[in-house]
Image 1 (tube, rainbow, N blue to C red):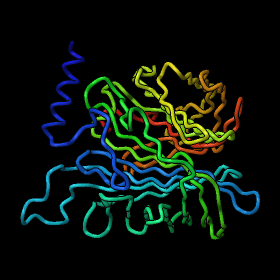
Image 2: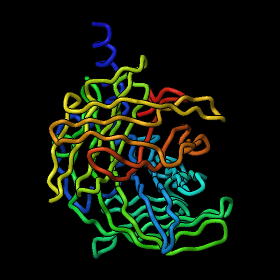
Image 3: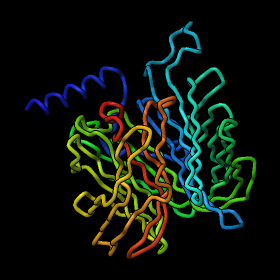
Length: 358
């Protein structure tokens, strides 16, 4: 009874604060819904992928934009245009699969004033000179560079499969109370070509990329400490997205779920009962002391999948305390077992709980 009352109070507080919450399958219209949704408190656009050059060198990368709402009200007459109603942060990480080195840069600016922006009618983001934009031809172009880490990336990405709407028509529940949900869509396989610069050398690269776009206000249930997320591209032409929502005691919440994308682009929602996800080995960060799961065993009987997912750069801990305030593990993974493949994993809540952040 007390827990139910606490959840109801949380929903009322968020409603009173003026933020919209995801409570039912949305009516989505693209390209408009590729853009920002400022009526919701949090939103992110994720690009993760693995690339190779003309030789044998391979890389993993992520370029992520995070929008955080600070005030849901519209600017009042006479109010300064520089008053922050929203903040945009971004992370750029490029990993060298051969050496195991990860290079990371971050930025954060208020939206407005010309330094950062997020269009609300299509995918069009910028944070200074870091950009993610959809062209009229339907491709996506991303670009980011950082002098401090001597890294740069510019890619043109063409969707190889249709957009996937996770959950029920894009409605992705993540907790028991109304509003404990997000809207979640993905391109699970984009063909990428472009240029990658690292340490003074530049290479033409190509590969495949995963795109996630998610927005909401009170996504996580109050007892969720973090999540383990995977976006896997299998060599047999399928993709598998899955996430385990972890409670404070380490157990998995029943709202943990996933999506299986078939070769033809059709998709199937997966409940927590369809999947088994077990950590088999662990890695401890030398900087934060956090103990992250490393190798995972994934079984999906309905699809005939029995997989081992292993990190390709064990030290992929990202310290984003200068932008988003979080430390998490995000890096490239390899897949073996009943099917081979590659992808990315994200592990959160191992340094500090994510409760109350999303």
